[in-house]
Figure 1 (cartoon, each protein chain N blue to C red):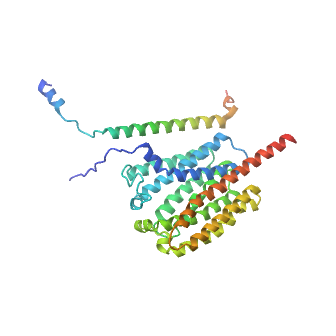
Figure 2 (cartoon, chains in turn red, orange):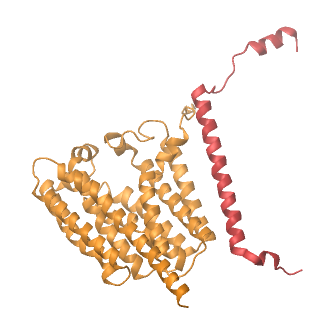
Length: 62
Length: 309
């Protein structure tokens, strides 16, 4: 690629959607909420597994 | 051949908008009545399992709310009470609400089935389907009996709570179902009396819009006259103690007095507003006293067993 070719690439305006500051903030908040909800779901599954298995967690055929 | 691609703006929906889709106020009443169903059920359930059941019921109720807002966005936009909801405001697209509600509905039902039991899960799935398909899609826009029949969805949580503990259904939670079922019409008709213009503008055939105010006021009295004695039945049948009986009698008498005031009122809507507000308190009071009655009864029985084994 020539020097002028590289310059043209850099000058090209970016295509696609550029998020505004408010959209970025909203997306970040939604992402955090989804992460927290998934984390809570994992904890619920883990604790319920412990409760359901109880002491039997140690009882398994060798 | 030309292809038209719809431009979708990136979402500006905040977490609060998605919480609003879950109808948190309705959800809180659902959780509370389901909790009572869990507490009054015979037998023991591990607190973690009870908590999980409550969470699933709460999320399932929220999912039904989101699906309702998805389908009713056109009606919501025309009513002052609901115009501020996330979809009419343009903060959440109907497709996002549908995806959100659908995902939560499936997740809550399957989780309840896998972690608690499938009877409770089946009842939760039925409740969501009933609310979304029978009430929202069919009855709401078609008949003034919409909230009467549709009220069954809101009345089911105590039965789901009971089923979460026992894996079955019995007469006791069915009584609680009937109390909420007969409570729903006077509650919503009191609201619709002073929101009739809103409903008429949105094309929702609520009773005051279709049959007029006089017929609505008469129906409020009739349903309240059924509700008040029904509220006392858990005590009469021996499922609750005298504390509940006294509270249900007093609150039922107050409901009847208010219904009669709504009936006699012609010009203003002061009594209707009072009836709407008090009806919420009535249901909360009945279930709260039942909860206290059962918990304190259990504690007293434990204390007696401890002192005189």
